[in-house]
Picture 1: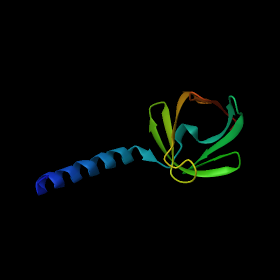
Picture 2: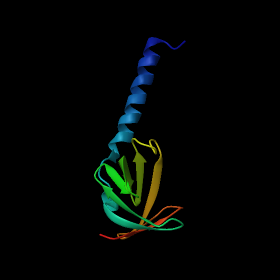
Picture 3: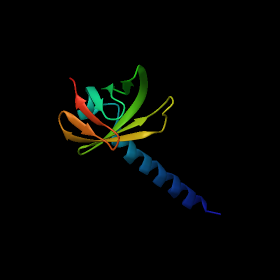
Length: 106
C-alpha cells in the first residue's frame, strides 16, 4: 500500500503530465485551417475550423495538437470520440496521412 507522500507525489506527477500534454493542444487547426478535398479511395470535402471539423454533412468537435509539420486531430465527442488522426503537412496546400491526401481548396 503506497504511503500518503507517495500518493501525493503520484497525483502531482500525473497532473503535471496532463498539463504538459494539454499545453500543446488547442482548438486552432493551425496549418489545416480551411477547406480541403480528400483524394483517396473515398473522395470527400473536409473543413477544419476552430474546435471542429465538417465532412460528409457531419460536424464533429475536435482538438488539435501541432508538433512541427504534424497536426493531430482528436475527436472530443460523437461517434469518433477519442479517435485521433495524424496529418503530415507536405506543403502549405497538401496534407497526408496513410489513408488520404488532402489538397487545399481555400
